[in-house]
Length: 323
Image (cartoon, rainbow, N blue to C red; front, side, top):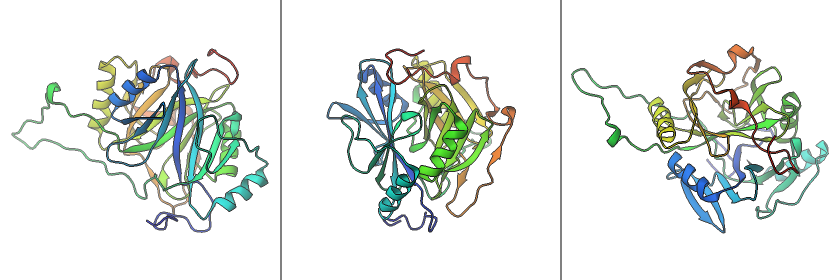
């Protein structure tokens, strides 16, 4: 694929192609380093921050910085093709966004504006990090007369392949859907009333690139990482829970997106998800978005989530403690 994304691009349609990276402020950078390294990410130190990569992939998926209070989502950065920046500026001008300076320590390239619920949002020229086809998914079964047992002492480490999606708390999910459609060109995949919504990229992405979860304020609900099998989903989750990161939620299978999941609770009350075999929406497919009842919107099978699963532990902007 070339720099303009040919081979995975919907022609004559303006829209972000990827989440380039997300940025968090955490109360303990060393704890963040331990958590994400055990999760299977490539954790690198840079200029007093921690950057998250996946094994063998040159893309930087996240930047974590040291804060003085609770964990906070600092901003989201989205990637666009290099011939789209002028068109994106015109679109944002037409939507009347308020342009802002880059947050302290963040790279200033691209366009920065105040997004929904006041979240800083960045649009920048970047390589397309979303896939152009559905991720490979495998299942290995032992042949008759042979053992498929894997001793715990020899269990392989799970290494996520890429960021699948990001789930964002929003104070008004229907309004946030409209906002991200109009500013970023995302498209609705599916939703469940005013409680949750899933949006995909027009140039080909997983069923959801961005998820929206109802709350009274912004924040990160979870970051989700693609792996290659149900075994990796379950093994990754079990490894993290045995290390004390819990209670999580899984193993299970979602309805919307159809992916297998295990949510690992991080040290700050939010989650990192192992995800496998999510539905993929190619750039040349018009997905029939639906509005689903609650019982058809969360999970097909698996354990019930903890009561606090959808609780937003981030403080409201301008406050020091979470409600």
